[in-house]
Each structure stands twice: as C-alpha cells, then as structure tokens.
Length: 83
Image 1: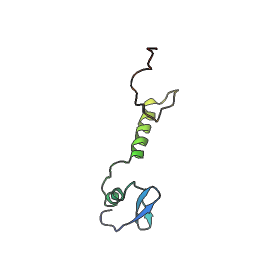
Image 2: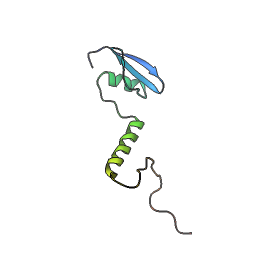
Image 3: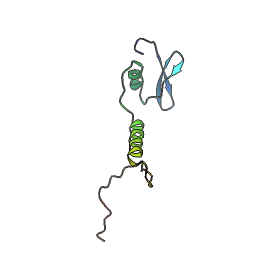
Image 4: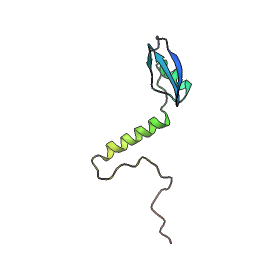
C-alpha cells in the first residue's frame, strides 16, 4: 500500500485511512493510522492485546469446564487466612 494515495478520517474512537473508497479499521491515534496506511506494522492497541491474551487463554484451556477470566488480579497468592 506504500505507493497508493490515502486520506485520513476521524471516526468515533480514533482514526481510519481511506484507499479507493475503502475504510481501514479504526486506530487509536492519527499516527497509528498513518503508520498502517504506509504499510508499517503499528504497535498493538490495548484492546488488541487484551483480545489476543483472551484468545490465547481460551486456546490453552480448551476443553475445560471453567470459563477463562478476561480480567487480571493485582493480588498474588491465596486469600489471607490469618484471621
């Protein structure tokens, strides 16, 4: 796509580039949209990283009876039972 002309459009939640009337996915920043339009591989957004982690967790735990948690705990170890 490096040789093609593109335009940028601001969308809800970010920016997209347009080539031949086709819109790209929405990127969080204008700079990420420009990188993608030029054919660079932009760094992953937070949402993309979370989706990738969830997908990896699903693949690693299949088949299982318990669903995968999409949240992280800031607490390590077991519950405090000193009471």
